[in-house]
Image (tube, rainbow, N blue to C red):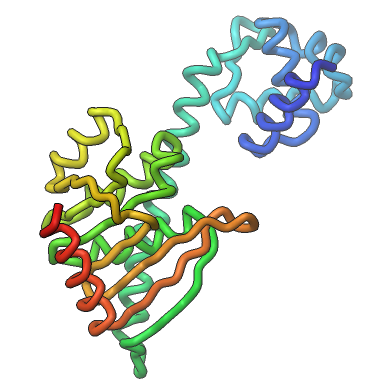
Length: 249
């Protein structure tokens, strides 16, 4: 089997959470387009007595459809996968809101609250996720410094846009002096109150706002290792330093 096709089949199986028989039947219908259950079973090495349940499961997922009395055909993958993707986004959004509400409820009944804290987190999504949480609950003008993030701007844009779109009181974004960014990203950021400035002093990915500092650094193991510091004095000192940099631009 072609190596690329093998990889695609694995992605289909993992992404859609299909079992072996469901995957085989789906791939067979992709090749045939339209077929009878018995022919699908024969071409997929699936016991005939199992094929109807398998086709029913694929139909429930919106991947195939029944045609006429005894035929099944593939639903255009561009359409079916888009619908599944949107359902995942909706489910994730609902789950995220439930977790946020649960976190607030637990915070209200917590007897001892830690106001000053330093913690290490690993990974790009984890770092951005922490930043989004802080930004959503912050009502002051924020400061960002982006460096390595720009190398993966296209891939990370959906997550970065979540930060940008939830910023309540605008932000200043410092980027390296020789950086070139597509105009669409600049316009979208400015639409949400971001002031973009270029500086030769940018050398790391940094966030400062609401008594919190997040510093992200490249890591060969985790891609990104970040430190989060919740401390008013440290945050004010770093914010003052950034404002000094801005004043000299």
